[in-house]
Length: 418
Image (cartoon, rainbow, N blue to C red; front, side, top):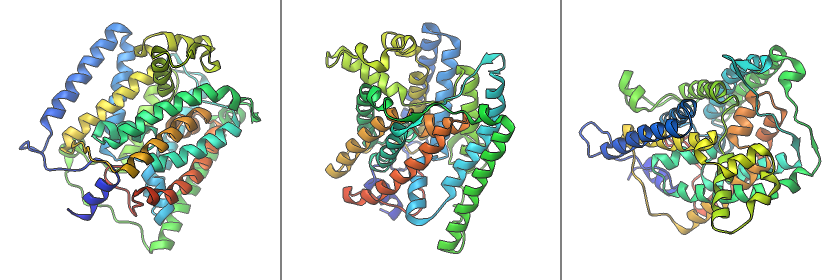
């Protein structure tokens, strides 16, 4: 076994294998993924609406982009912390730059293609700082962020199933406790788009993105003398587009465009973790573990409708399922779908603790790396920037803790992403 494959196995990731199919595609997984996507889309269109079905397909495209570009927030931050390699961070800045350029004018006008739109703008207070910090720790212990957890589950990582289950539990407990955390000191929701106007806000944001890019370039060259060379592409042309792997910068642009499409279709940006609180609360209620209908979190009319209605009506839920199936489709096309069932006790323990921290932290911080960081900053929300800083410091601590659980701290971003 080579060093790269051994590293992936020890970290609980998806293991690249030689497919039994002549063209290198995992045929059974491909057929299953395609059938579930088609059936799911027809079901959602019939049960809810064509718009909801389109959002489901949008989720599958997000899963495919995440997998093919190996777009991992967790691993990108980890290799920068451990070895000052900054390509992943620079890709995130490109993603944010494209997203803000698209979002800010639309949010300032209040509509997009005739559809009312609003950003994800949340209060900034103690709960956000603490929640984002423990979310950052959970990223490194669980082995992924919110988007990373979903797309690696779809890609075949059985360890991430443990993280996802704990993620749902932590998010549910966080929803139960949120009323107390919300009572702590905080600033009201602050939209920099509204405060400064779209063009000044965009100029300031792009300046900050540029400074971060320059800073990572300087630190990487100072540590290594040069930037890390890009690996040679395994494929080119249409086969590369269909089966990957994609350049990470292509993934950054793809995610920004798909988030903008989410804004246009759903009327608000992409989010992930509110669905976990919904799933966990529904399960807890059905099993008689708690009277979730009395929780403050579900008190508003909108959230109560989510709790009592079908999950098919919840945009975030159908997109989350779409991400998993899109990643499964991408892994099958790449010939890399190979679930691994052997997980060490220490790795499983880290997945449980990490997932709990991820779920609890996401609820306290009004979102995750997608809803608070990506979509928060794209919405011009000040809390998105606070989330980024607090989560980064949580990642620093989480990276230091990983070896105690037998988890690797690699020096370059793996092809498996998170």
